Each structure stands twice: as C-alpha cells, then as structure tokens.
Image (tube, rainbow, N blue to C red; front, side):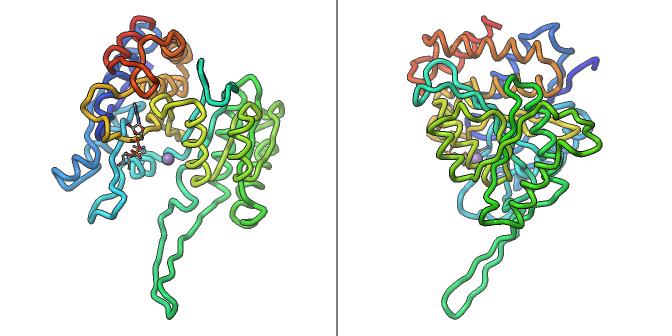
Length: 347
Ligand code: NAD
Ligand code: MN
C-alpha cells in the first residue's frame, strides 16, 4: 500500500471527543505505516434529528470506494422506537459485510479479582436474533411476540475461521465455542457443529492443527469468565451471546473506556471503542480516549501493520501502569487531552 485511506466517523456524544485521539495516535506513527489520508464522514442520531438521515449515502459510498478502513466513535440510540430511525452502526456492519466483531479484553495493572485477563471475544455480527424479524399478535390471553433466530452454516463457518486465525496469532492458541446447544439443539447445534468441523475443511489444509478446541455452555461461560478468566483465550459466539459476553468481559478489566473492538470482514475493517456516546459526560472533556486509541491499534494490526499497532498499545499500557495521568472513570483527575498527550509522548 502506498497510502492508508481511513474514514473517520465520530458520530454522537463522546465519539467526537475520542476519535480525534485515535487519529492523532495514527499520525504519531510516522514511517511505521503508509502515508495517511483521512476522510471525515457523517453519521449518527444527532445527524438524524437535524437532517432526517442517520447514515447518508455519501458516507457509505466513500467508505466503500475511497477507504481501506475506518474508525467509528459511538452512536446514541434511543431505547424507544423513533419513526424512521435505525442505528447507523448496524447498517454499516451490513453494508460493508463486517461479519465479525472482535474484542480483545486485556488487563493492565489493577484488575477486578486480581486475576490477569487476556482473551478475545469473537462475535458473529450478522445473524442470530439480530436479523430483527419480530412479530406481535393479539390472542385471547393477551399479546404474543415472536422473534426469528437465524444461524447459517456459511456465517458460522466464516466466523469460525476468523476465530481460528486469531488463535493462531496468540501464544495459547485455544478456541472456545460458546453455545447453548443443550437447549437450542438445532440453531446452536448448527453453530457448534460447523465450527467444530472448521479444522477439517479441505481449504484450510491443516493450518489449524495446532489450535486447541474447547466449548462451553453460555451461562456457565459467563460464570467461569468471572471466576477464572485465565481459562479463556479466544471465545467465539453467536451474535447475542457474544454481545453480552463481550460487555461482561469488559467489566473485568475496569472501565468501558479501555476496551477497543474492530468490526471485520474479508474486505474491510472498522475500529470502534466498545463504549457508547456517554451523554452523562459529553462535552466535559473527561472522556477516556484509550479505548478509541486501542481501536486504532487493532485496526492497524488487522491490516498487517503490527509495528504501528504495538507502538500504540505499548504507549497506552505504559500510561495506565504509570497511573498519574488518567481520566476520572479510572480514578484519575486528568482530562481527555492530557491523557492523549501522555500517550503521544510515549509513542
Ligand atoms: P455508555 O457506554 O455510553 O456509558 C456507560 C457508562 O460508562 C456511562 O456512565 C459513561 O459515562 C461511562 N463511559 C463510557 N465510555 C466512557 C469513556 N470513554 N470514558 C469515560 N467514561 C465512559 O452506555 P449507555 O449509557 O448505556 O448508553 C448511552 C448511549 O450510547 C445510548 O444512546 C446507547 O444506545 C448508546 N450506545 C452506543 C454504543 C455504540 O455506539 N456501539 C454502545 C453502547 C451504547
Ligand atoms: Mn453491546
């Protein structure tokens, strides 16, 4: 690559405060990565309330045709239904076929329970209950609501391969399939079976022979995650379990303001801090920028720029360990920009 074209989509709330931090971290890497080209793009609920659209066509088109990767801030989604509004992040995942949501959860310094955590949640991002096919009917005994849960072999296989590929790049090389096939033997049964069969697929040609495969029922997986997080390396899960599991895992390492993610497909990758738009602290200048900066690092790693990625990660970890320049969510008294400066100095 001659240049790296990155779409920046701050969207709502503190997304606008933390995406500039990620941009500056990338800029600080100099010749470790190709020349950077940024495209500032619009999306979000606030945009919707002003213009009636949450995700302009132009944003999607520029991402599809003019960008190699993107960074997304956060979006505010009202919990009641607002006519005409649907979440731009959900739509982007679909438009760009970002079928995997990948969240490494790593403890640095202090952590809950005193046990070190170093795991990755690999969440299927396109189906399960999130196909949003819900119906409601009136019956004699009251209303009755139903939802469709879709699990396909194709989506289970590609998320399985993604999980095995990630495990290959980690020291412990272990994949744990998270499911509930003791109850949902058909849907979760298919997910489990398909992933179990991934190492034997002809096209992977024995590549995953060194990866250990385990499995765990989802409820006991959450229980064990809190009691003995060290047993997990790469956890692969259908959409809903993965959503819950990855937020739960984030709680283990302290603040939501620390946990990064990427949405990845075969053609595109989009970094995204796990947290939301945080309306309670918006505009106060105290949003923790570290999850966003780590998301930029993950994006780079996924694109193959390991040097750049690890320079950002190392600088972030040093700032956390050193402990004197932290935002209030981590018990500190520093502002967003003071934390950004501390990281940039170390990069
Ligand atoms: P949230 O993640 O926005 O905030 C939860 C709590 O964590 C708040 O107290 C907040 O101040 C704190 N927090 C989050 N990120 C922080 C950071 N970087 N630094 C310091 N503190 C931080 O979740 P919420 O309050 O449940 O939701 C607020 C809005 O965000 C809602 O509209 C929700 O729909 C949306 N949301 C969006 C995403 C996303 O964009 N992917 C994810 C979750 C929630
Ligand atoms: Mn979530």
